[in-house]
Length: 312
Image 1: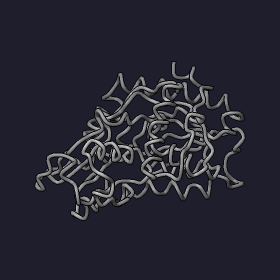
Image 2: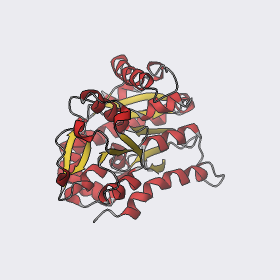
Image 3: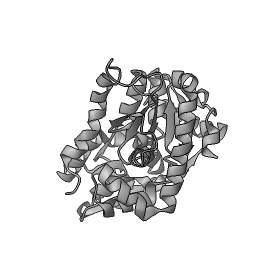
Image 4: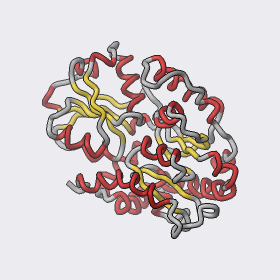
């Protein structure tokens, strides 16, 4: 397999990076933009193309790990899916939402073994379903349950990080795995069936989060970087073959898998708006109703349009 378990585990090294981000021998945090990114997310292409050569880049395996870095003051800006900002807000982490993307519903899916004969998510009643807690796929789970007229207690939810989910799924320790690209694309092996993706259920947008003190103290750096990031994203969409050649080595994934994942998951960036805030608030209210977060939160108040010009 071109993308080994050891490589997957490198994502968790993001947590270890937190300890070094504030070292006295490191970059001047007042003049250096500290960017948190996830493997495969649009920021990986920006990093590979050198959009911010003077920035300090930190790799995280998932959105929840990245929001913990915001809490620790270890990064200034980073990108996640739609659920991590909500769980982070529920956890009293301070941040602003400064950008988003067009919807990416095909970029996350429920994977099962074809031999099991499952035809719909409803067939998973009483079965074990794995996913990363607080990530974009957590909202997809909520919508899948709603569509299948199931309660969360009707399935056995097992919270596993991507590096844990893949071996558990391969070994048959879980009946289904809800996961996003590129882990999704990597798991598309013979005998694996895509039971459902998020089409018609969840928008699965990318969200760009920033520390409040960075929004005020590093505004020029953020504006310049987001302008480059948007241009690079547009370039990648227009030049798919070249994009895959650049990203495959960065991701340590073979070019064919990279191409397949990007074809469905790479979407244009977009400005943050009050309508996007309403969309996020509906997700937050859904999590609250299911008692997946401790009480109601006002995620709309986190929307910050300061850098919208970068996305136009």
